[in-house]
Length: 384
Length: 110
Image 1: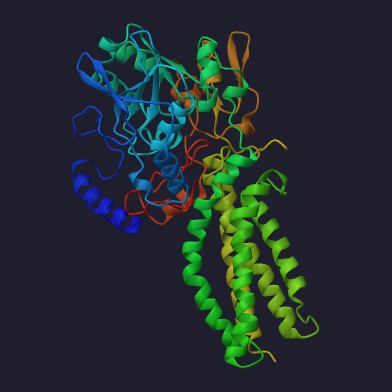
Image 2: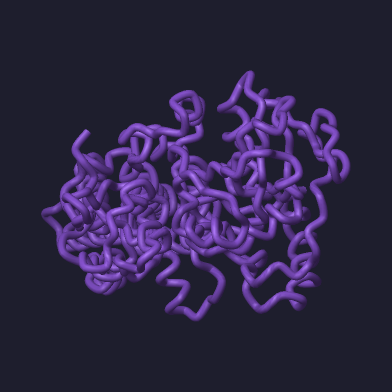
C-alpha cells in the first residue's frame, strides 16, 4: 500500500514539477493558501483577522507517533508533510511568541510536543516536507520563503510584537538581517533541540552554550540506523541471492551440498558486513579508530570478518581455505567501509570538504578491495 | 564519550577580521562553537570542528565570514558524480529526511 502511495505521489509530483524549475526547490509558484483545518492533527480553529487559523495541541496522538515510526523506516516518507502557514498552539494572543518551523511533520510534531501548556503561534514554512536542517541547507527554509509567509499569514495583524523565533539549525538558510530589512521582524535563533525551547522562552530568549551545541549521542545515532539499514538491504536483495547461487558452484561438494555450507556462509558473511557497516559503525562511532568514516568502517568490517572466519573454522592448511578466508576478509571490510562512509550524511559534524577528501582514497580502495575479494573468491572455487 | 572530530585542516572557513563588527551573530548560530569573541571582533578557535553549514556567513551582516557551503554526505557526492541532480541529501539530529526528488524517496542518509 505504501508503495502504491509513493507512486501516486510520484505522478502527482511530475504534474506539478513543470511549473517550477527542474529542482524541487525552485521559487514558490503557487499562491500561498492558508493551512487546511481538516488535517488530522488539527483540533479546532482559532479566529483570526483574516479567517480561521487551525489550532493544534502539544499532545501527540497515536497517528502522530505511528507516522514518525514509518518515516524513520523510510516508508511513505514523501507524504510526511503538513500544510505550510500559520497555526495556533493552544490559545495564543497578540503577545504570544511566534515560532517558525518546517513543514516536515516530524519537525512540526517535535516542536509542539516540546511546549505542553504553552500558547504560541507556529509559522510553518513550505520546505517541501523536508526537515529544518536539510531545508536550510537547500535554501527552502530560507529568507524569501520566511518573508513571504509572514506576509501571507498576515502576521503583522495577529501579533503586536515584531520578533520571530527560529530553530538555530535553520540559520544556514536565513539571513536574519535581511529578514529584518524586508519584513520588519527580528529573527532570534532558539535552541537546536525543541526540548530546550521551554527553558529558552522562560529565560527571555536566552540559550545556554549547551543548547547551541550540536551533539551526536548514542540515541540520535541509533534512530538513524533503520533508514540506513533499509537502504543497504535493498541492494542486498539483489546481491545476496546471486552470490548464494554462485556459492553452489564454488564449494568442494555437489551443488546442493555447497548451498548448505558455502552458500549459508555467504549469506551470513554478507549479512554481518551490513550489520558492521550500517549498525555497529553508527553505534560505536566515537570509539572506532580513525577520523574518516570509511576508516572506521574498514576497522569494524575487518574485525567482524575475522571473528566470522575464525568461528566458521576455515581449513587454512589448504590454498582453497586461505583464498576463501582472504576474500571474506576483503569483501566485508569493503562493504562495511562503504556503508560507514554513507553515514557521513546522517552524522552531525562532517563537512563537505572533509567528505570529498575522504572519498578520494576510500572509494577506490572500497571498489578495489571488493573486486579483488570477489575475484579471489571465484578463483578459490577452481582450486582443489 | 570522546569528542567527535572530523578530518584535520580541510575546512574552507575564512574570517576577515577587518570587516568584523563584533555583533556576535555568528557565535549564536554556529552549532559547533567554532568561533569565539576576542575583544571587538571574533576569531576562529576550533576550525576542524566546522561542518561548513554556512550559518555564520549567511547571518554575517558585513560578509566578514566566507565558507564553501555544502552538506558532508558521501551519498550526495556520489549522486552528483553520477549526474543524478536534485538528490542532495542530509540529515538532522531531530528528524531525518532526505532532500531528494520524488522519484528517489531516499538516498541512504538519515
